[in-house]
Length: 341
Image (cartoon, rainbow, N blue to C red; front, side, top):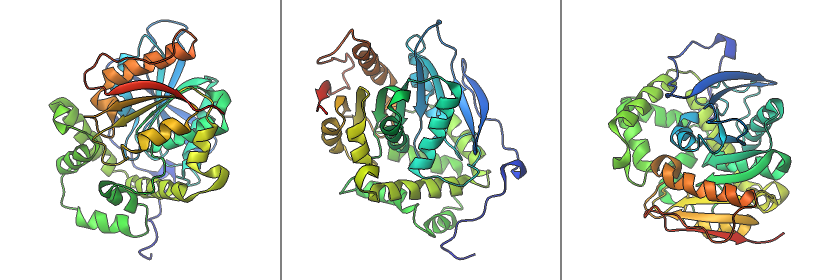
């Protein structure tokens, strides 16, 4: 096998069983078989009947567990489900090996169509933000509102701290990285990821750190772990190069759903400067800026994000609108913008 090739992955039915995935109190985890893909779906029973449905999509290297804190806070607001994208979390690889943004979006659409839950309040972080943007653009009937936390939309000047992640998508880099880091412990890897993704890694509790280490140890034993990471990174890089109607910014212009945009001032992966461009591009948007947050604001400041989403929901239901305030002192601003058609 040449250095430009990724290792082959055995069929799903031949993969070894990994340790059980953690399920937090109040959560349920189930497997959903769909044409060409099997998805693991994390959910919380709603506080009461009749709540509108919500679906959450994680970022590169993440899983549905990234949304657990926010889902718990929104118990009485929406009926929450978070899925593991193909090859991540507890979901096996897709049958066709397609980890492109379009491939991931197709998996989300297939799930929503099969479940009959649409239109949903759709959430996306990082890679999941790009996926959610594509879903909202091509299937507006499935999306009631859109909430994007540090969405991975193309940047002309990528931050230096984001370059190593992007390089994973290039042939041979993953193999070199694996060899270079083979002596690293799971604890060292998790500390590195948290230093990159959190504005203040000190906000991570010892319990949450332990859960993250256990999850990484589990996933590192999966034979397709690096394949899913590298192919998804490559899919994201490829999406950045697309122009015309398939470009992510052009698709963002087509989104009809009221949109909440969340950006962290200490984000090392998505430039904070992109917040204003996103606010101008999404036609009916609210912008929440968190100066002290990193790349995963829904994990660092779930209360603030939950409050902002509640205001978006009120606006979408016709009982709110205009400038919104957030009581948390860490929030810089939440404002609604409308760019028109």
